[in-house]
Image (cartoon, rainbow, N blue to C red):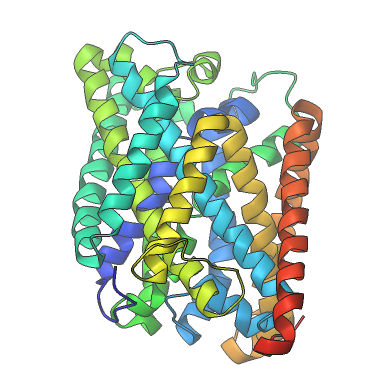
Length: 438
């Protein structure tokens, strides 16, 4: 793989990459989990999640217009906090959040593919198929930007068009009942405000792919304008798609049925509507979406980790490998994603990714508010709103998980502490010789 190439990604190619990451992880991997927490409100949860993501996107838009870079978030953090511990810690949270997203999508690929065969939903073939997808993503990524751009565009058209066909057919079959989007009030007495707010953490995760666009900012044509355009257009495309698909699903499945099949809910919704043909069609779209999602995510995170290495903020070893640092980072990323795919289930993978992402997002907004606001001409009230929304959603989600899966919280915050302490140790060793700050 070569180094960064300016003007190697067109506006359409960048939009395809952003929507590929969001739709691949969002509607297929998270729809059932959002429904489990929010009940009949889950279509609304996706809408509200999109609005919150819109507030978050404001900071990224302002930074990308001022400082387009192939390092994206890593470079933005450096502008706000300098080359030091906070920058490295937050950038690594984003990195691991993206790698977690790759394993999430890889397992989703396995879950949907097995719907074509008579296999149990907890089959060992799910991680096997997921690992195979990750290896495929590695092979495609070492082929370079042109291959990725062309495949991203084709896959984005196929999967977005396929999802809209599914949603249109499902909505048509239900008689265009708009009231299906309006909860009846019988959403399950056990759910409360905290569950609904916690569901937003997962719905936000379905939109986080817009941040991967910033990691390729230095490679997008006319980045000062097109990075922010790409983010806005990608969010709008995904928001409309999520709304229509969730409408189609809730029009044809009850909430208990969606939760029962939460790892493959779209495939389950297609069975009563379109029979075996519908199942094959939906699973095919899921396969395209998950493949393209992993390819695009690996593409973006390899750029950011290579930038962190160039900035001397993370350790790096060649381990005897030849080629560029970017190629080495691809190997490390895929190995970590494979381990997560084998040992974690979809629910825990998604929850861990949501916590990492929201903490990183708050750090980004705080840097914009306190250190960069005047330079990039950002409006304080929008940035403050983004911080408050993130904090409310994150605290609600953590509260729910403490009750339902306390081990996950220990894993999440324990691993963040390890990342922080590990980076502090590494940077303390490098400070005198590299001129870094702490």
